[in-house]
Image 1 (tube, rainbow, N blue to C red):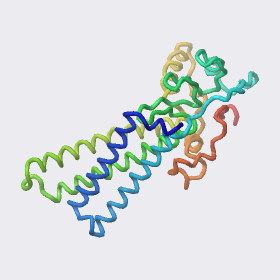
Image 2: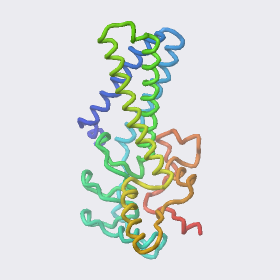
Image 3: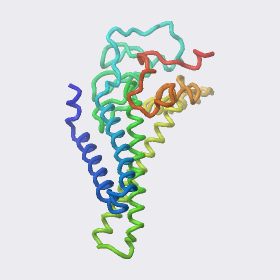
Image 4: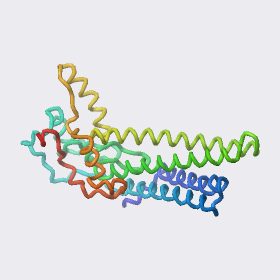
Length: 272
């Protein structure tokens, strides 16, 4: 069953981290800052819990959604020349699955199968990030970043109001400083990851394709030619291919009605 994926130490650590961050942000820092019973306190607590809930919902989507497997009946179209020769050489049969492998699919050693448009295998969701759950993964990082930034700002606001430099016990000061540093570090790491995947989306790349592209560009450069990622369309088209054509649904991790079968992807040659 899919719920067995939750029985892993990294996932339990994620749940623990979310719980601890929510508790100290709401019941310690917001309460110390303006008080939970005040209008400002209730509003800040509501906003933070809303972000945390969206983060948790996206997390569940990442864990439970099948990233995409190759149908047993899949056979590549030998007449399809939309991709480059170098890209077509990567496709064919998977040595480990002994089945045909569609464009942009890769074999995952952990899941022991080929995954459609595989980005990477994520230890923290105990699942691959692929064609069907990539948007949920991106929204997870997005909401987690916003939540951590919000918590960091609240800690700074609370600390400045308490005037920790001149009042309060040493342990109280240490707790505030450590909490601020931890949340600021989480915000930086998640923000960096968010920026990285936003860049990949604008280029219509996966993490695997990015590193494959580095080597491909080096090989092509040796022959005096220039390399272009075969699936890179316009920036807006690249974004809508992941987040969807409806801007109002971009922030919904389950809005993936625009996705097709994950076996064929448009290229610049299709529109030329």
